[in-house]
Every structure is written in structure tokens, then in C-alpha cells.
Amino acid sequence: MSRRYRSQDWFDNPDFIDMTALYLERFMNYGITPEELRSGKPIIGIAQSGSDISPCNRIHLELAKRVRDGIRDAGGIPMEFPLHPIFENCRRPTAAIDRNLAYLGLVEILHGYPIDAVVLTTGCDKTTPAQLMAAATVDIPAIVLSGGPMLDGWLDGELVGSGAAIWKGRRRLAAGEIDNEKFLQIAAASAPSAGHCNTMGTASTMNAIAEALGMSLTGCAAIPAPYRERGQMAYETGRRIVALAEQDVKPSDILSRDAFLDAIVVNAAIGGSTNAQQHIIAMARHAGVELKLSDWMEYGHDVPLLLNMQPSGKYLGERFHRAGGVPAVMWELHQAGKLRADRPTVTGRSMADNLHGRASVDREMITPFDAPLKTQAGFFVLQGNLFDFAIMKTSVISPEFRARYLSQPGREGVFECRAIVFDGSGDYHARINDPSLDIDEDCILVIRGAGPIGWPGSAEVVNMQPPDALIRRGIKNLPTLGDGRQSGTSDSPSILNASPESAVGGGLAYVRTGDTIRIDLNAGTCDMLVDDAELARRKEQGIPPVPPSQTPWQELYRATVGQMHTGACMELAVEYRGVAATLPRH
Ligand code: FES
Ligand code: MG
Image (cartoon, rainbow, N blue to C red; front, top):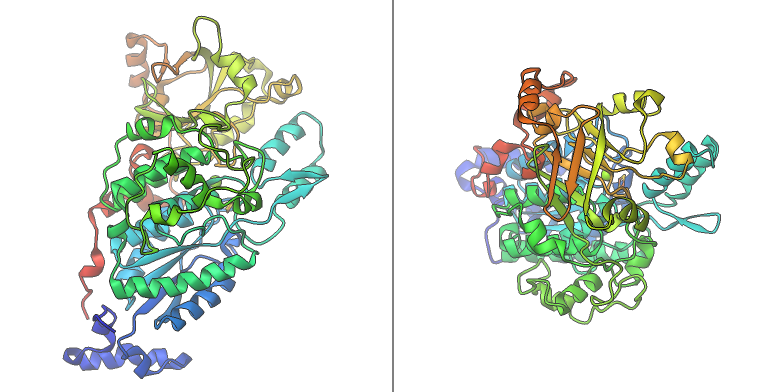
């Protein structure tokens, strides 16, 4: 044992022998000996994100056993503890409110307990950024172990992807093609095993990004949860974290600006979730890395879509893994000179070394860089008098949508729509089928009150579907716009994450049903065509009402959260970095 670990300040501290006695004694009640704790071996935390109410991550209850084996074999002492649960689909009013809560809880645990290094068990959407944000704040050696996606879903001889099947199913339900029973059958078929979403939704995206950042072992993100390689990866991750503890390799050694720029590039190439925007910014800010809003266009926009996975493509997670997973996508990008791969990773080698020999074996799933599924797959950034920043996921724009809105001769990329404005999702559901709104294909559906403060937490509601009558006529998508988010599994080319939100007086607060909204993808603008005098008059009327907080955390969240374009971070928290270096008082 070469170095003195911070846990020894608890367990091996002659200056505070009474405290050391107190710290040591209770661990014996499950069989740990004082000799183990005083042996100078590193104490390795396992942040356990799995539980009965976080089913996407529940596989980690099993995987942790193999992590422990790896830690013990490499000479560490494992200590597993719970992370505040986050389950995307079930948490009301939205799981987004818990990213910062899980972050906050993990920071306190890693700072206040005798933990020298930590395995972050990730899976469902926000469980990945929450833990990486905390690891960056505390800055002890850390490694990501993804839980992996579910097996591919099948029904009636077709692939059904989780999340994506829901959005497709509700359109078919509205069109009268299926009944409620069939809808539930489709949902069940999309989730055939343990694991997180098997589509390139936010979960697969954020785990891919953790790997792209260099925070997991190579190939970790895409292994399906039930595969034998997943347990083997858990074991190797357990072994590796002990070496990282010994060598004191910290998140601050790995989470560089280059790493985050590569994350933006990888996100585009995999057709990653729009939620990645705020999470990448949040992780970067907690790591002390400056990302500019222009970085999304400068580094991401021109990157082609290389991965043929739903919702941008056809297939699901098992095939992604078999095709080579994240390293195979990154290998293509690296060959094309798109990465800054000469940077350290938790493997102990550079990213470039990790990618060596990782070319894909399945060219339908992962295409060559110069024969991509789509060109310019990165997020498109927009601004104007409705918001300072919003994004559009161009990789999901369908040929029909492109033909209808973006290909008018002489004005390609420019379209004008009549706004139909909803105040939150209750209002949307109550009125979307109201014939007096007269919604047709020249309309844009606008939702506000869905941002971090308005909701609170920022809700996945922007992918609004058209009125049933329109769907029956074959109009499956209308342009949509809002200050909320949308599911990473959605195939809707919405303008979303609009920031600042209406609840803090962003431009969306002043748009009215019937206004013309002009979107210009050449100029990168989105504006309501309302004259200054009228706008001034509307501003005097104030912003739409914001519902009261229902719990103490909601109030605290609202009081501390920033806007989406700065990552919806707890603003005061980004000032803290490297807090493990300041040992708490005895
Ligand atoms: Fe948890 Fe998709 S709902 S991963
Ligand atoms: Mg989601």
C-alpha cells in the first residue's frame, strides 16, 4: 500500500483514538474486522442506484456482487450504499427534479463517510449525470459501471423499442388502429428483461457519453443487462477502481474540455437524446469545464449519424452491442479525425489506445463515417425573441416532415406556422381535440410552464401529438415548441429545452394562440412575428401563473436551480469542487 487514504483519517488516527474507536466499532456488527479497516487498504464505495422503485437499474443489486469480488481480489474493501432512486417513467411531477437531489445526496455521502474511491452504478436517464456530477464535485477516484439495456423487444415479428413503442402506439391508438389492450401489450413487449431502455433514449445516450468521456471501461455502455459480459464487466470494474484509488486518478484528471467536446461529437453520431444537452453542460460545469453554447453547432452539428438505432434508426441495443458498441462508433469518428482522443481515461490508457482495433463488424448497424445514415445529425441550436437558446434534434426529421416544412422552393429551411399555445400538459390534454382551435398542418403546437421552475423540474411534454382528427388524416407530426424537454426515445423533431423558460419571463410567456411563428434554419432563428408595441402591452399583463410547490424539495429546487441552457444545475453547487480534500470535522 503506497499511499495513505482519506479513510485512514477515520480508521487509523492516533490523534483521535476515541473517535477512531467509535468509527470502527459498528462495522463489526456485520462481520468486518478492525484489522481490515486499519490495514491501509482503500475503502471503495459502491453507489447503488438499483431498487424496486428504480427497475431500470435493479440489475445493479446483482451486479454489485461481482463488483465486490473485483474490489476484494484487487485488494480493496467494498462498502455499498444507496443512491436516491430516480425512475424516469414513474416519478411525478418528473424525474428531472431528482437529478439534483441524487447529486446532492451523493456529494454528502462521498464527502462525509470514509470512502476513498467509488463505483457509480448507472442506468436510467438521470442516474448517470447525477453521479458523474457528484464525482466531479467531490473529486475522489471514480468509475462508471453501466447496468446495460434490456434485451431487444419483439412483437408480431417486429422490433419494439422501449419508449419509442409508446409514442408510436399512442398515435396508432388516436388513429383508431389499435385498442387499449393492444397498446398495453406493445408496452409490455418493449420491455422483455432487466435493464434500462433498449432504444437510444436518454439512458443509452448518457451511458454512451460516460464511456466517451473516459469514465468507464471500454465497451461498458452497450452490453445488455442480462448478458454474461455484463457480470464480467462488473468484476473488471471492481478490480479497476482499486488501481485508480492506488494511483489517485481522479475525475479532474479525465473530465477535460476535450473529453466533453468528444461527448458532443459522439452524441450526434449515435443520434443521442436531446436530454444530453442539459446533462453534458451540467457535468461540465461541475467539472469546472467551460462549454460554450456555440460548441453544439461548432463541434456537433456537422457530425453524421452512424448508428442505426431507434428512434433515429431501426434497431435496438443488442445489435448495437454485437456491432461493437460505443468504441466502434468512436473508432469511426477517430479515423475521420473528429475526436480529441489523445486524453486519459479510467482504463489507464488514452482514448485513442482504447479504440485501437475496434472497427465495427456490422456495417448496417454502425456505418462507415463516409457512408452515414444521415449527414449533419447534431443538435441544431436556435434563438430569437421566444428564447435565447433551444435545440432541435435533426437526426429524427422524417422525409415527410422535411418535404412539408423545410423544402419550399426558394425558401428551403424556412417555415411559418400559426401558434396554438398550451399552458402545461393539463391544458394540452384538455384542449388538443377542441375543434374550435381549428388545428391544421400549418400550426405549431407550443407548450410553456414546463421548464425547471415552471413545472417544477422540466417535463418531457414537448413531443405533443396532433389532434386525433389530424392523425386519422395521416398527419402524424406537427412542429412543436416548448420550454420543457421530450423523451430521448421520441422521434419528434421538436424545438425544445427553450431557455429561459416562461416561468422566469422568457419570451414564451408572451406568445398567444394565433401568432405567427417564423423558423429559419438557415439563420438559426425562431421568432414570434409580433410588433414591439403589442409585445410591450403583453409584458404588462405579466407571465402565466406558476403552480405552487407541493413538497419542501420542490421549493428548494426552484430556489436553487438555473435554466436549461446552463444545465439546470443547482447554481450554488457549481462553486464547490474537490470537496474530498477538505475533510469534515470529527
Ligand atoms: Fe429508465 Fe428508460 S425509463 S431507462
Ligand atoms: Mg426520458
